[in-house]
Length: 255
Ligand code: 1HS
Image (cartoon, rainbow, N blue to C red; front, top):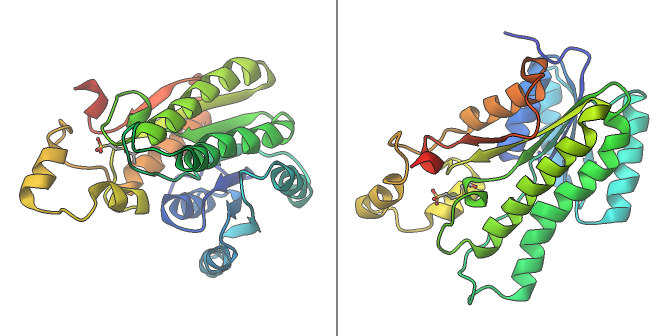
């Protein structure tokens, strides 16, 4: 086991389940003290229990990342909790909705933009003061949908493109303060909540083949392949990587 995160403090949003939870486990197993954030208090309690039982150092705060006052308060509490610096923020929280431009209503647009883009903005805004203390890294979850057009993903594409643009902007603004900011752009990972929504109900061979045609590597991603990219980008091994849009997509955006 490598131990890239001994004495490092890490915050992960949307981490009560799925890849956020698995990243908390990975950071913890590599020595980090981890704070997990999520809107769902019950799932957070369960997640903390599981990770405590595994001997990991994990604390949870319930948070709606779109609520500016709540984000400010929780990051204040995180500063007190760590009583020192924050080293890593992973902006993992995100949702998807489907529809072309004409099918997308304003409420859907605002909700998807809020969770993906505004949440990333607010958590980053209030994390920076803590990240500046010793230097650190932010990793944003964007998507292949941020860099190529995908039918029926009008607002998701726009929201993830905002996440990419904001990451580049932060990278330029904060690099001088010792904070590296990068994005991962995952392709479809079947074994996640969003992956299941993307694959929908038509799991016929024909439908799956059509989706897989976009992936030169011939399959969808595995969660651990995305998680590993995030842990790399957040680590000192990536010390000269700043402001990149890091596709983890089996060649999908190269095709
Ligand atoms: C979930 C991740 O952001 C992937 S977006 C959908 C990609 S595709 O496989 O439907 O083209």
